[in-house]
Each structure stands twice: as structure tokens, then as C-alpha cells.
Image 1: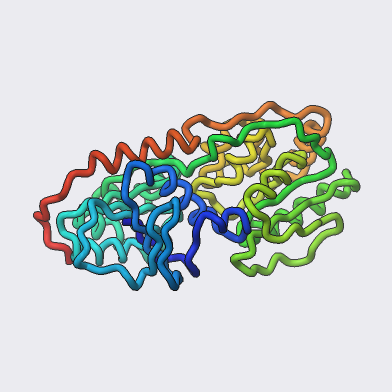
Image 2 (image 1 turned 30 degrees about the vertical axis):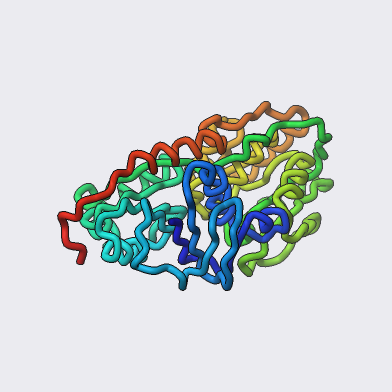
Length: 335
């Protein structure tokens, strides 16, 4: 069973093509689809109104979750308190908390609770795992595993010509778009022909302040349309300095198709996901951003995907985890 108590509405594979789907939901669907030939998957989603059989599994409403059911394993998305509640109902079942976010200060009790309940946390990068362990403290760390978010195995460079004047921002606006606007406006004083295309998935409204000259809004795009925009752009322009990614799927996808990514160094998982140092800058330094864009307009760096991010590898990691998760004998009382 996969339990998603965070979704605003039910979601399925066609939503990848219509757009507006968040990275967590897209990742869950891709992993579930890859695992479905080997496992019988039931996916409980908050906001879903009806049952549906999908290639990603049996999709059901969160309200259908019944404590009388006996799953071989439970995977809970992000909500550690839901995982604890399910431990009370399923004392012998392997339970995994699939974490896609950095916990806030109000979640400090999660460490001892998860450890006592024998719940394994799945983090989406090594950076994410280290940050979680540091946050919880040495005595309160449950078991932590790292399984990356997946890249489609079919994502590779092609012959699409690039526009040297076109930059792309492809994230929700709360991920530093206001700062990116300011960085772009500064950049454009020296390179007035630059444009910044903004692909906003549309699931969150956010005040981004004044919109500079040269910004083009693309709206919510299907995954295929977003990849086509990446192929056209000089680079993915993401040197914001405030929003720390636990993984950053669009960064990895851009590199997979040969599109360089301009990111702020030493923020979240940027250095782990964007391994090439040439793609990382000090986002506080406009001169460094300008110099990198000028250099890339002359000659783009050769970038590639990390093979560890590919869906085939990631699905194999999940399969190994689930196949070696024996039933648990409850020895500790869960408070």
C-alpha cells in the first residue's frame, strides 16, 4: 500500500501529460508504475473521489483505508504522524515513511517516535538524509535509506536547436522565483536580448513581486511540453539562494537532455544533483552569474544525467527494499 495523505486531489498517469502535477506526485506514479509488474499496489490518495485501476496500481480514496487490511508493506508519503497511526493498526507490517521535504522545527518529536515504532525513513538524496539526521540528533535517528527520485530512462539529448537568448525557470513560484526575477533583471542590463520563460505548474499561488521586462509565462505544461522547452533553452535558470531542494527533479531532467543548469552552490541538494561544478555559482554574485551566461552563449558545457537517477535503477532499489522487508514482530509499544 502507498498512502498519500498530502495530495489535494486524486492523481493518475494522464495528469503527467496534462500538466499541473507536483514533483512528488509524479515521482510516486512513476515508481509505482515501474513496480507494478512485480508487486500488487494499492494507492490511497487524499482528495480522490472514486476508485480506478491504473498502470500505477489500484487507486482509491484515503477514506477507503481500512485497518482490517493486511498489506505486505506500507509506504506513507511525508506525514510521519500518519505512519505512526498506521503502526498502531499494523504492528507487524514493514512501514516506510517516504520523505520528500525537510522537516520543520515543529517536527522534532518525529525522530524518537519513528525509531520506537520501527519505521524506516526513505530520503530522496544523500544531502536530504544527512540534513534529517542532523535535525533529529544522534540518539533519535530512525533507520534512514536513500532512494533517488527517478528520471525517465528515455530522456536523452537530441538535435533541437537552442536559443542563446532564452533562459527557463521551471518550478513552482515559491521556489525562489521572486529572487530569480531580480537576478534576471540585473542580468538583462548587460544582455538586453535575454528572455526568461517561466513554466509554473500552477498548484500554488505566490507573490513574486514585479515582473521584469523579457519574462514570458508559459503556464502549466505537460511533462512532454516542458521537456521540449528545456531542449530549446540555453539553460535552466535557477540561481535562487533560499529554497533548498531535497532532490530537484527538473535539474536532473535538464541535465539528462543535455541542458545545463545554473544553480546556487551549497544550497540543499544542488551540488549532489548537479554534479558539474561549472553549473554552480554564487547566486549572491551578479558578476558571476553574468560571466557564466556569457560563457555559455559562446559554448555550452557537455552535461549528462547521473545513472543512479534513472528509473530502471531507482525501481530496482525499491524492489530490493520491499522484497527484503520481512514481517515485523512488534516488541515495542507504540505510544
